[in-house]
Amino acid sequence: MGDDPRPVSVVPMAQRLGAPVPLTELDDPRVRENLAALTEQGITTTRVSEEDTVALAAAVTPADLDLDAIVVCTDTAEAPTPTEWLLAYRARTGRHGTRTLFAGGSACANLAAGWDLASALVRARAAKTVLVVTADRVPSGTRVPALSTTVLSDGAASCLVTAEPSGPAFVLLGTATRSWQAGAEANGMAHARAILTTTRSAVAELTRPGGTTHLLTPNFGSATRNLLAMAASFPVRRLDPGVAGEVGHCFAADALLNLDHLARRPDLADGDTVLALMSSDTTMSAALLGYRA
Image (cartoon, rainbow, N blue to C red):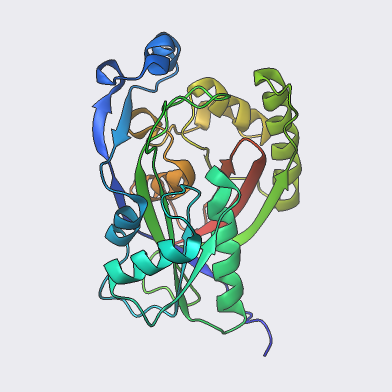
């Protein structure tokens, strides 16, 4: 049973975000300490949810679609084991007969692994339509990550991965992932160097003639977004901040949230290429997509 030669497409489906909370109203000492820098870089709001990741993931799982498989991406440990998490998710969604798989270990870069797994199932004709779900939240502690100027937000998002989209879709042209080992003395400068090096390497693997029409970055502050644009050889002046300001960094959901935001822009045209970057403290992933109206 060989790979299906037809292109595999990504179709943004649903999102479930926590309630918007201005950073000035957040009871978080680390946010107060970094409020001036966050505001200066365009991060003003976070999303806070009382729902756990099972509820968030279930909320973006359509009840009326025929799905052959579901790939769930999460690194939020709210169940003793992945198996128990999936049992709760199946019970909440009622999808006991749908094959459900986990993709994790890359934190905020998990979506690329989810897309790789889903597209492999479709190309091998083991599935026609796969739902990819990301769901993460901050159950306790600060919302300010140690090495990035942003705030972590609670939320989930989903997309279909299929060879037979019924409308506009983003064709998945390729993905590339690079990882590095964070040393015990890791600091902001070392982290920036690692992101620059791995971004350049991953993007080089995906470069196509004609360049990239749109670049999507994680929902970091403007300085980091500009740094990623330069590493990807993309003009900073053309970089769209997406939903960074009003959502914050929603873990692995960022790329789906910004892809949905891009799909609503009037200047998105058939044939445009989209480079989506996803990163965590030790992993950088890039995905190249082509828009088909």
